[in-house]
Length: 341
Image 1: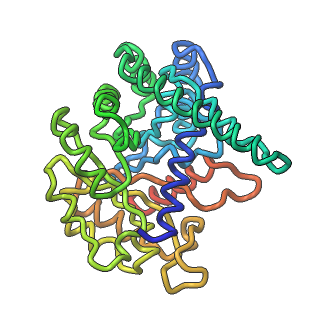
Image 2 (image 1 turned 90 degrees about the horizontal axis):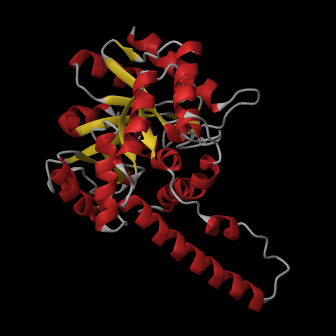
């Protein structure tokens, strides 16, 4: 895997690990919240020309997290379908907080070598305890709490089509929890980053729960010899979350070549606008309409062929001054609507 790809995967995992505690600080009365939202905002609708436009909730990582806020962001942006990041869901469900994350943020500039070693041991112990507590919590979570979360999304008119748990390094019991919870949320599957070990680990659980194990690509297609076939041959339960932006930005190849070939094994498409690999700057996220990703071609292909593939906005370009991530996602929704309507 190329260094740039590794940095992106790590940043996503850091986001999952460190934002759980912050998100859990936002607490509302679910029933009161749902009733208030029903009164204040219309139900969102983001299916245009037969193509379901949604968003991965990672798009709102710069804003306060949690199920209640995510629902609010969806309704403000007009989003009716999402790939839900698991930290937002688990914080609502009552997951224990990671105190080790706070310890990692300590400034160690003026500390002696002995003090740094002591803090490292403390962090290691805190991380081990957190992982143990989290596993215990996950494997004993009552189903009623998950049903409550699903009800909130249902009342708001928002479908959770995937949950991004990224669980392949977890214990068997926790992976089982991930699929069980995603299924209870009405999702088609659990998403993770693509890799041979991840695919082989998650496929049997997807088969067991009659769900899909869905895998997201970064710049792997720029590596000679890379193909989806290696992973798809593992199990019919394996599906792809094709990131058209990463694909185009790193290869310069039209995304429709992959979509046409694998349309029956692509569950979702992540959409973003990027410059191509030969541009200056190369392979760079930009505001929609300012880059080279053939977004319109992809959307119109899906519209023409009527393939049931979800298209999820993944907001990765810097949010302009005076705006916020919700407003920018709303612009992307409107961008898609104009093409498909």
